View 1 (tube, one colour):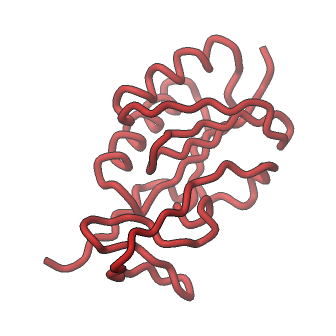
View 2 (spheres, one colour):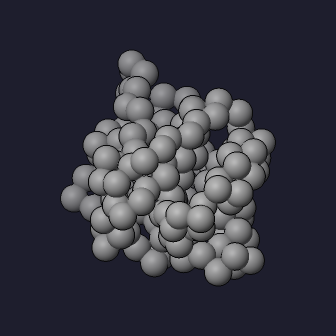
Length: 151
């Protein structure tokens, strides 16, 4: 089986999984289902065809539930199969554009600080898989990045 690295973008719809061989994107899988349904289905097909060396995921900010489900699923998969888990904040995958929080609030990143900002008009910046994968761009800090405003 071919050795590959994966990028998982689970914070929007569709959920995207990029399969990379030697840093080159060779296949893209997607699902419009919720993370809890999509991830097991997508990975069932992947693990039967490839040897996974690294998984990179968007650790947040974004949907609390999507982040939580993805982290638990991917972390467990990595522990059981001796795969290295890496992460980046979600802004790395949407050209640093606002990310939906709730209502009219969006997460924004400015000078490395993540806050929320209200927008009257909906902001839509899709998440995109990188064309080339450079593992050194991703962090071993994989804990979910939950950015919640004060209540």
